[in-house]
Length: 308
Image (cartoon, rainbow, N blue to C red; front, side, top):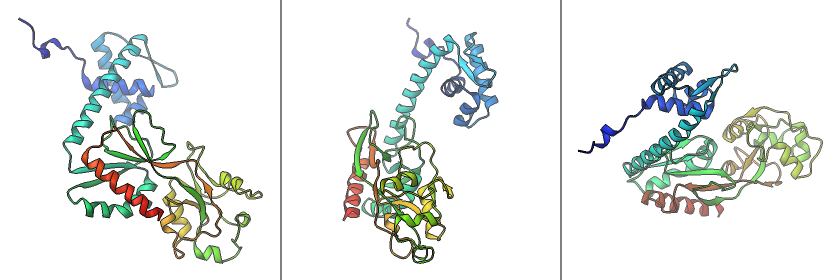
């Protein structure tokens, strides 16, 4: 008589497999522990359990406190990663199917606070049967691992394996408080920035973004030290400081354009520079789930209204 499926399986301890797979990607137990929310020692213990189960060493411990996969570890890491990715993707699909009344939107902190959240009430009014969950972080969403239905991202729109639809192009321009614009020293042209505090977006990874050095070069201004001034990790922080009169920041039509009202923030001069990046609506498949289709229709209408 044939054995049933469960009796044919002889699986290693799955918690140990998960710890090993994370360590194989990060090449350190410390970073694997950060990902899993446990200590480096706990990861090391799980790896030791897995090595005991196989009777083989899966890692070589390095003097630098990192680890390197052995040949056996390399073979198992590839298989474990594929299995865990497949399990995560299947789980994410089932979670999305089981939460038809919840729409999870992943986006950046600044887009969420400056553009999406001020408008999201109208989506709720149009679709009261849907509960919206906004998750803000600056990393690219992994639809196979993350609990997200749609993402709004700032980039060039190249996201392999995903559907990416253009929402908005963007331009970059200086903003400040009315008191700073109208006070002394004068702030009537880009050359006057040499005598004012510049507020910087401190993103060491995004080398192509338009910061002060790129903006000043694009408008042909020299003699301004674009390296000086305080730094912040998000655009919305810069705009808060600028509104309080703490200096001149760079806003964009999308991120901060709504705040340029003549009372809180103003553009001291009309010069602007096109951003190399645009905003895209990113989804995992070509065929939208009904709740995703409703969000796509809503945000497309909101973009058209903001353009007007």
